[in-house]
Image 1: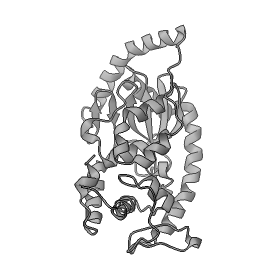
Image 2 (image 1 turned 60 degrees about the vertical axis):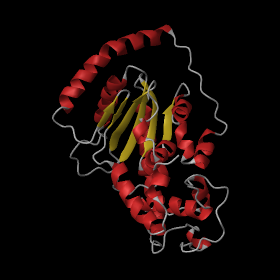
Image 3 (image 1 turned 90 degrees about the vertical axis):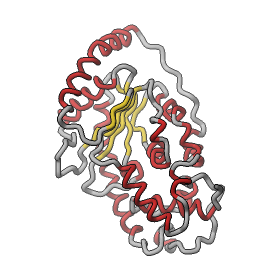
Image 4 (image 1 turned 135 degrees about the vertical axis):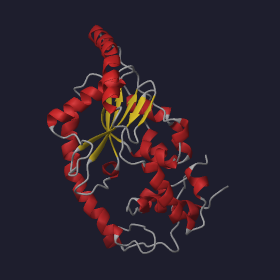
Length: 301
């Protein structure tokens, strides 16, 4: 099924509306579902404030989101400063190749009381060791969000870990939601070209969000792995010996605490709620009002 340009705009604005996030015309083009070459001048049925309000586009009756977005942008400033400082400590973990921000802060859409979601890529065969060391750093800094915490402002949620040899998301999760998560992630620090390798391993996202994909990959050459000196060979050897121990200890700790965590080969994801499920449900409600089929947007490539 082919969509008209207006339908693609509807699908794009409706998805952002789930997160109370009105879009500028440039942002609509960047995040357009299926890609568009331009945003039509006339958008019947949409709200478009005056220039003094930033020309944000939103669904009917959602004008209040403009003020909300501006407030969250202000809240995000301090959070970015704090997480960039924290990232300097995480990069000291020798098995970490990338530290990135996901969630609302990645889009400057963070409430004052929100926590901060972080994403890590580890060297191969060090996934569980990396999580142990990163958790230790967060605990020492006093910034880790623990299960059951009620006050989570600026706490760090160690949301997801991937190994460098397993960078592609599982086939069953390759949908519109995941495409946004991949392309919205903001690297704070990376080495050995791992961010580009991560993008290329998930090139399937370009079918959902071609314009955002082109922006992220334009002018980026594939990173080359640097030649490791002997000290790194010894480090890798030690990490390989410690990895089974870290795996066993964390599995034992988690055995009675498992909820909605996702643990597959090369990936660990911790999150109290299955965001994909509620996002899909809310998206379906919004698209239904505009007679845009959810499945063709959310799954079809």
